[in-house]
Amino acid sequence: MGKDYYRILGVPREATEADLKKAYRKLAMKWHPDKHADPEAKKKAEAQFKDIAEAYDVLSDKERRQIYDKFGEEGLKGGAGAPSGSPGGANVFYREVDPSEIFSRFFGTDRMSGDSEDPFSHPIFGMAGAGGPFGMRFSTSGGRRCGSMQGMSSSSKPRSYERDLVCTLEELYTGTTKKMKIGRTRFHNGRPVKEDNVVTVDVKAGWKEGTKITFSGEGGQETPNGPPGDLIFVVKCKPHSRFTRDGSHLIYKVPVPLLKALVGFTVPVTTLDNRTLHVKVDQVVNPKYRKVVPGEGMPISKKPGEKGDLIIEFDIIFPRTLSDDQKTKLKEILANS
Image (cartoon, rainbow, N blue to C red; front, side, top):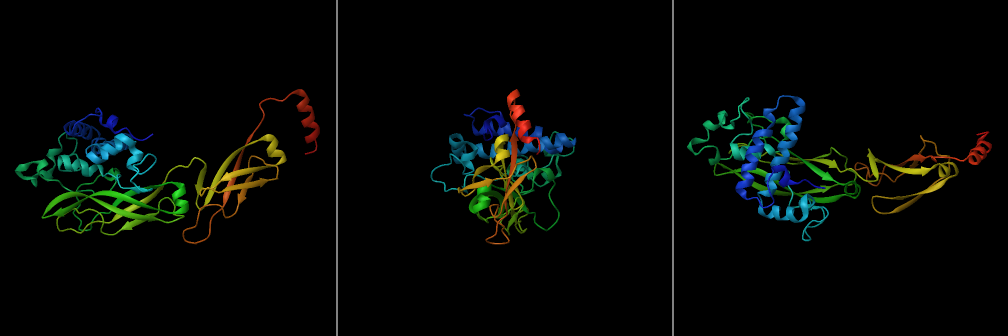
């Protein structure tokens, strides 16, 4: 089940824009990571802070809120229940959120000053002028994770915007194309303007979790005359219901009754591209035995046409009880084994 953005913000489904802003301000002040020194508390705060920003970002956008209300989080991400006009894998309603950018939009800075409850005490407000913090928006961290909440950089080198590219194991097996909508800040006539940037990512078959794809200059700007940063996607793989990936190999676990483990059997395996393999096992299966099917694993992206192996592991199911007669027969059969 996806995230409940209304519950995260603590507002009813009929909440107005004013209700959303009020709820965001209150929760962002409470959960800003800079207010939590203890490592465990800070880690929890970072997760909450990101969820709060994501919830506000979706519910404050009329079009995306309508999609969310009808289809939930998966509808925004182009998953099950997505709008019929959205092509498969096209995440045109979903964008990764930079929580510090949302915070700076409200308060003019992405940091809390010391232990102060008042974000307006930050020195940056000397730049805001009489209009106060709501008169101008400042772009700060771009796409960095809130775990590295830093102030405005004095370096001329633009920061890179890093985003997760979540893929299913099937998508990494066959390859796919994803459209990602990313919020960024660009300067126009000297003023920061938040805009959406849609980029197309061609996911290659065999890419592994952690693979990085860089779009040079597609990130945000931090200063009016500064160059835009790079936009970097990092591949993340959703857990699969049947397979576990181990490099270029696929691990498949199957329960086997003791009788079959002793006399042999055939394992049907539905592959990631919907073929059915009938794998014959005619050895005695012990708890450490693994059946290897060569060439039925993941594609190897650097070696076109080659694949890893499918490795079948077995969970042997023993009978709960045996009659005296069964025990006697087993002793006779297995006496010399």
